[in-house]
Image 1 (cartoon, rainbow, N blue to C red):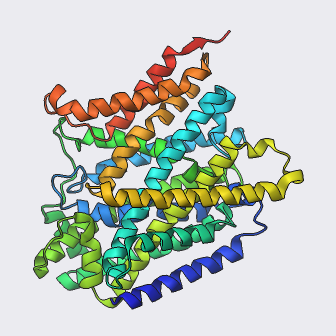
Image 2 (image 1 turned 90 degrees about the horizontal axis):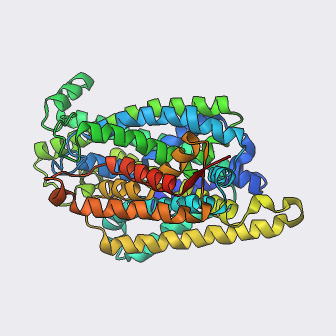
Image 3 (image 1 turned 180 degrees about the vertical axis):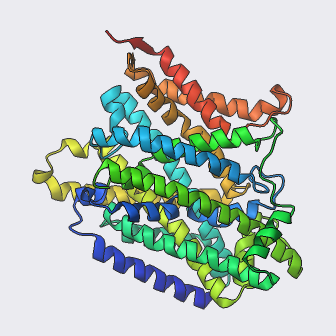
Length: 490
């Protein structure tokens, strides 16, 4: 595809999103922006969350990692993680979501204020903002890098201009409607994402001269299809991956304002739970399609004598935009745009919500008397986080060395652990209260200890490698630290 054709597709795509945003934004009030007035259809939320959860990282990095046998996500090992997700989402639906609905929360971190106090509340919200800012920036960085290689470099346009253009677009169609708009745009973007995925698989099947049955057999017989890993020292050992996946789902979905914000915008807890169970089933199947696609990409490249890029994140875009038929290339482009922006626009909205509610105290202010001032403040916060995402993308441009998905999950194990420990302590130790002013110390100490352990694990523990179980350890150490600063309530 020529760069000008790609630019034309992008303009048409974002034009469609702007139309949807204008039609769904409603009155642009803070209630509409934060929780969509609790009128979101559960089936649209469930379908749209697929795109928001996957992002461009899954769309590009997971298929590429399949052939990187030294990666924690090499072969089909990612499905060990995806299997754990299902159980994690069940915990979210049956334990956490009823709590959020019972307390009628706008920001889920307000629970920490009610349970422990001021400093615990601010600490939880801070770790979410840190986690989501890094995660959203990683995801955007991957998509922007792909566009840079295949579009902006050919037009002799700098990476900075590419990043600025992308962030401005995301800001523009989220600044007014918030969650109400996201429910509809995410569903639209998920349609493009899954459509692109299926079209690419069909294209490869046609090229290799096999039907659906032959495709399954080809993948199963390939060297890439190994799923279960039994060496406990490896980071991809099945138990580490499965239980890591379970707690990643709990922490990165159930304790994350981004994905929970759309869930608590449903009419009631029953509809929200239907959304979560439906979403988890579809997501497992879509993840299976992505790792299968990864095997097919390597088989296709080998069959056609195409050199594998040094960085596996570039494999899918290289084949899609240089070797696939025009329609498949077009749908790939729409797929990666959809996956990335469905995740990034939700992140920007949730960051704005958390900062406004958790740090600026919007819910404590008389909305009827100061609605214009609050709306203006919300817009300024929205702009501020857009600038922050832009700055983080430029930072990653010059420091990131590993494949994006491995880096993303590694960072998540450090930043989401304190949230996991805080909520576990609050829910399962009801008779103890924290010395609230010491909570930040306990929540910062745990990731620091985990970082030291991770850096020295091979030397100290006979070649042992930490994988996603680091999140569980981090949460446990946070729990222990919180117990140490707690006292029994009378």
